[in-house]
Image 1 (cartoon, rainbow, N blue to C red):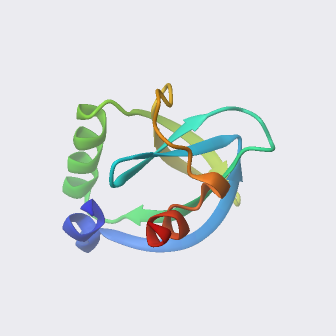
Image 2 (tube, rainbow, N blue to C red):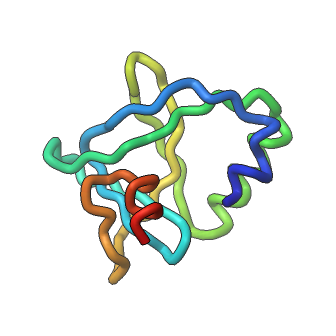
Length: 105
């Protein structure tokens, strides 16, 4: 996972559930779409990026593979999220928990 490549520039903050999103599997990588529906939830890990070079690399990587950047409020924090526009025909991660889904495969 790309987390291993960038982890020296990240500081874990917390894990929580957010409403209004669905999660899908693009082979070995997750992607989320915004639905705006409170019944749709995903589990997110929030990290503080402590290295501006890492922040730029992550941003360029995500935009380069087709994600777009958005922001949302999570537990009173403004956080960034990278989203796809459409799920296409990729399988939905039921329950929105990538760790559980990936471990079950």
